[in-house]
Length: 105
Image 1 (cartoon, one colour):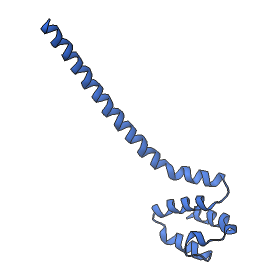
Image 2 (image 1 turned 180 degrees about the horizontal axis):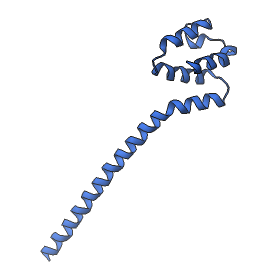
Image 3 (image 1 turned 45 degrees about the vertical axis):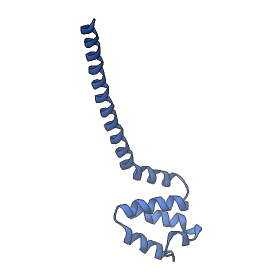
Image 4 (image 1 turned 90 degrees about the vertical axis):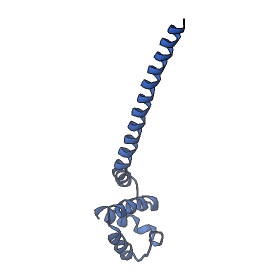
């Protein structure tokens, strides 16, 4: 009976190793999925902004995207064009035009 118990224990060990391998593989897949979603996010932001009216939040997201693309200087110049040092100082009636120009950057 002792040798049978050892065989069972060895079987459990093999199953445990297999489960660990699956867990690691699944963890890597989740990590890749999160990275892929982050990479796709700027496109999603642009799509949402094109479909909805210009809002402060939408413009802020677009400008954050443009900043990440290295266009901080252009964004500052665009804000100055609308007489503002920061986005919160832009007049709401200027949001649609500002968003259109920011999308072109």
